[in-house]
Image 1 (tube, helix red, strand yellow):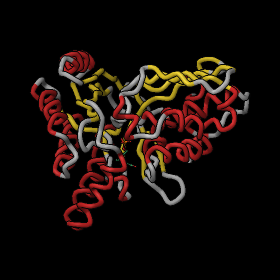
Image 2 (cartoon, rainbow, N blue to C red):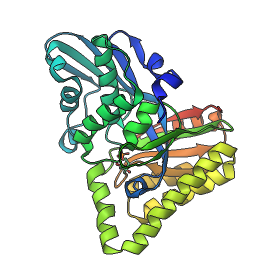
Image 3 (cartoon, rainbow, N blue to C red):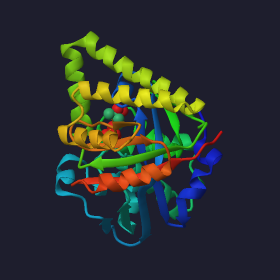
Image 4 (cartoon, rainbow, N blue to C red):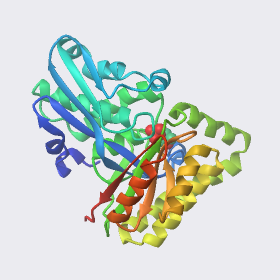
Length: 323
Ligand code: PMV
């Protein structure tokens, strides 16, 4: 088990002042849904995330931007998650939460909120920095209030702060950093909200009950795309990465997890020259997607083009090469 926070300087980066914490959102490159059935996943923490500030007060909560009404119906409120993270401290502080990325889209905003709240609490109470495993366990317990039973993949990626592989385990998952041979330029975006993680995971479970071998084969293929995708990231083989992304999207589409409006965005990204494009996260309706591009210039141009489509939020992310 790695102590990501210490090793990678994550805590130094997130604590901007004594009472403010930032935790990144996450992007699953590979392995969503398959990870529920024991297959590996690959994901990265984003430059955008959740910022949370505590000040002495009386339990007031300010959210910016305000959450869309449909999110309130489908997910636990940020207030409930915050209460779970802060405990009795919640009544002695006022909290400002800024969501720097779309919520309920598959970017792990609940996990980021949980991690940011725990880090801010830790700083506010001037406690010693939490070891990574403690932060992971506490954030996972909070996130399970939002998502019910999850594999912990969101919390694992968000709390690692880097590009990682993830394999669910009986106690804690196995999480490992993935070195990157060459820079990777992506467009990251979303169209509205996904279908609700619990509900969509339930749809896959229903299909597996109806057609066990076929569904299991599809989930195993998704696991293979995680392995092949990780190898391609390590070796810098863009053609292999492209093939893994395309196959993963095709399988998720075949499992009925890609809504038609989101598929139109994926098609547009490909038509505009993306090397590959795929949904990310639970899917099931709208939600998160990403596109692989040749370089940052192409990613910026494509993000700008996709952002002109109604309801689409898109931006470029550059993953620098690293050991
Ligand atoms: O947080 P989401 O909605 O992107 O989904 C996480 C990935 C799933 O595999 C669909 C669920 C899980 O618990 O692993």
